[in-house]
Length: 247
Image (cartoon, rainbow, N blue to C red):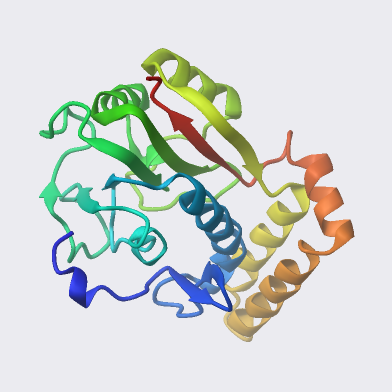
């Protein structure tokens, strides 16, 4: 990874032994902290279990997960496209992710694809490219939103069900190790409420911050976890997946 010595935490930060959303509104808007927290906890666990060897951070942006995986891998390569709306100071290679990527076959043991696939107009092509780049037994670790507003317009093309993700993996030759919804109906309601409240001209940001704080607390209670489990199959806020190229 280029300029690794100057890497700083951006979207995600380590606090109290957990990976959580940044509280800096320049990195994560107040209305998005709940989903950022939910996604962060899954990456923290999955990278601890699955990251190894040569890692490709695909659609890397500011490389927000580097602090989590850097001690678990031997080599990091950061790739992103030129029209990214994020700063990419650690970019090793600029590539159009809608086309074949100029990297050798089977050259990575781990590929991270964080909040990227919804921005790809031909997602199956990218999944096949990921299969080509993964070494045998190599793993893809990724997430996508589902009930989530348009973002990075006009480069926001799709929302995927779990059945679409299963189809992409089967068609490209990968085996799913883990595919789970992120959140449920309660998380969606909190997310939509806070994102709209923060638009109010007076008191919107503090109100949204309060909604997000209540949401993060409630979703970790026994009742909150029960409601998420009961509703997430039909009303997922997003999906998290780990897949593997067979040996």
